[in-house]
Length: 231
Image (cartoon, rainbow, N blue to C red):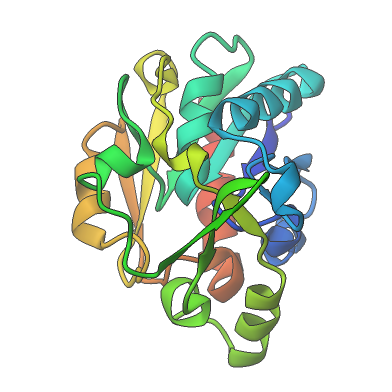
């Protein structure tokens, strides 16, 4: 039997291009990515969590056949919102991601307090948006320095509204899910990931920073291949 397709959903501030090392380590797999509307290079054009969910839903529908969705970090929020009744999604893999419940937002799940490394911006006529104070340290602790600097330079602005909007649908309640804990994560502490992982059907682990798609793409690809092969 052919393996299902794969949809990769990046996290906040990140773009599909950040996932290229991982894609390169998945030859023979039908890999798709989605650009989230809440991240971009123009703060005036940023969408929010609900428009991210719509983009993810559209990407899944465009694939048509069976698909496994891998959502990184914030990407877990709109993925959970988008796919509750998606008939062709075989499973969801939450990669150091926010696996939230109905009524939760990213910010509420963190106790309502923004992370210390968030940089908040307010611009008249634009709204509120975020940048990252020290992305190499926060996201890329075990990534080669030249790769980390390039990845940090490619980050976009992030919609603040997307972090405050509440889930109204919960895909993991009807679709099997796996949680991958990144045990050296500087963005989402591993003990927080352990709490999210209690909602998943099973838990896997990588001794990696927040971004194993850059630091350990082959190891991550091996875990994903196994997920794709599950009955």
